[in-house]
Amino acid sequence: MGSIFGIDIIGGQIKRYALVSIGDFEFEKSVTKAKLFRLIRSKKPEIVALDNIFEVFSSKNEVVSFLKEMPADMKLVQVTSEGQSLLELAKRFGIRMNMRSPFDEAKVCALLASFGVGYEVSAFTNKTKIVISRGRSLGKGGWRQKKYGRRVHDVVRQVYKEICYKLSNKGLEYVESVRKGYGGISRAEIIVNASRREVPVHSFRTKDVQVKVEAVEKEKLEFIPLSKTLRYTIVGVDPGATTAVAVFDLNGNLIDVLSRKNWKVSEVIDYISSLGKPVVISTDKSSPPEMVQKLRTAFNAVIYVPKEDLSVEKKRLLASKYNFLNDHERDAIASALDAFNVYKSKFKNIEKRLPAGVDVDRIKAEVLKGSPLAALLQQEDVEKEKKEEKKEIVISKTEIEKRDKIIAELKQENENLLKKIDALKEEIEKLRERIVQMSKEEYEKIRRENYVRELEKRLAELRSEIKKKDEEILELRRVIEELKNLKMLGLSGWREIKVLKKFTREEIENAKISEGEIVYIMDSSGGSKALAEYLCSKKIGAVICGKEMSHLASEVFEEFGIPRISAEKLEIIVFGNIGAVNSKNLEKAIEEATLELKNRKLSRIEKIFEEYKRRAV
Image 1 (tube, helix red, strand yellow):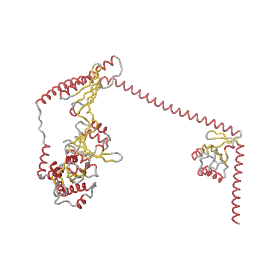
Image 2 (cartoon, rainbow, N blue to C red):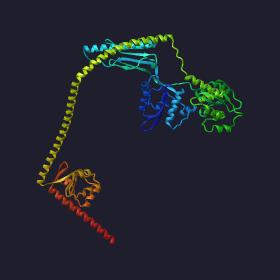
Image 3 (tube, one colour):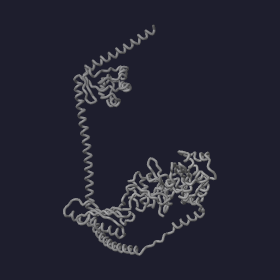
Image 4 (cartoon, rainbow, N blue to C red):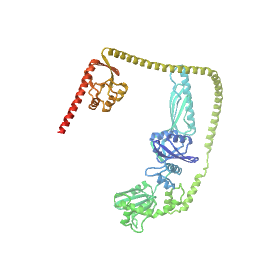
């Protein structure tokens, strides 16, 4: 046996997988998905086993892509099926497992697959498609291009004939479709009536031709059992006008319970068969009804009857943990559980004595039917030894003749290839001499090209820097012009002011306001109390408001005694962050605003005094 990989998901933010290898080489690793696929490609295990394939693969397409990349004889196996858990299978084959350990689960998957348990994931039909085509496009050209195309098409035809010869020589049936090209074949497609592992051709590519070999994909994934491992069951039956059937496995787990009116015996047999192979047919009556006898005969099973009819109280107690629709289903469950409880100690004794890898349920079924446990164990050992023995290889005369013919052909092909190799070696030597002659010239040419490339790169950087500097010069010239205009205005009765476009802390800091300066806030509507206090801390001379200021900010300026003037009363010219205002208008407006502040303060004092007088009286 080669090696078998068992895989289980670990999880986390970045998904990782527990990988356990058994067989020729053994190891345990925590790997990412990419590394997992690399290890499978490099180690080439016989089987890759998982609890559920969709823990690793997100879709059918990903499964198909994975199987296309892997060796044709490798099997992808899902060990569980619907209605089965990994823990149940491990217990059935005597394997201990820690459910909290992904490495334990991965190892169990590998062991179960080695015992022949599980389902091979089949994504391809037993047909293989081979496509032979040109290695590259011919493009456009004159007579030289036509000459080249004729040579390529001739190579494609030779490869096509060689592949057809190999397929015919191996006795494989196939259908081909050929597209002719100038001087030969441009493309050929062969559908072989055999699986990819049987086809003696592999994908390859050369300068002139490419061959692609791939299995024909199925419409949907199929799960093919590795071996026929039946589920053995204990069946409780309550016959009558309404018949009820309860099916348990040999570990005492309820598989299903069902009841129907006028249920025919043949339909009951079909229902029981769909859930497994019954070992015991049980009833709650000490004298078994006719239907129970018929079912026992149909399945060649052991019949279980209690020493006396089960009481209603006992049946209620036995079935209390389960959900059932009526008394008939309760009685069927109770009869099956009563039988299981009788055989329970015998089952535990069998489990203790069996080695790992033996189908525990099959041995239990054989023991219940009367086979001695010792004889069954001896039989298992003999079968194991037979499997390990090497099978004698018998080769027919026809196969020997075929092989000799192939060997002769390969020898001839080998001689032809050796001649080609000698010719190619001579050509290589000539080319090496030519390379030595050209190397110095080529090196000098590359050095010059690299030097020119560096200079061009540096030139582009310098041009970019010059462009930035030109933009800065233009901006500075504009500022100088504004300052000149401002200076001229200052000489003709205008006063410089600091301009804030918005009432924000950032604008205040960027303006670099000095003590006593006049500040013009173009949009003063967004000012808060804190911003007003911050601006007042600069000890400004007055504030000009472009829009109506908030009530809280206005109160702060009033507390600090800083006049507030509406921009509508003044003549203002703005140059970016600097502005100018008519001096006469400004002085007059400041006087009015200052007087208004004083009047408001006096008014408040008079109100306070009047209030005080009223209280004193």
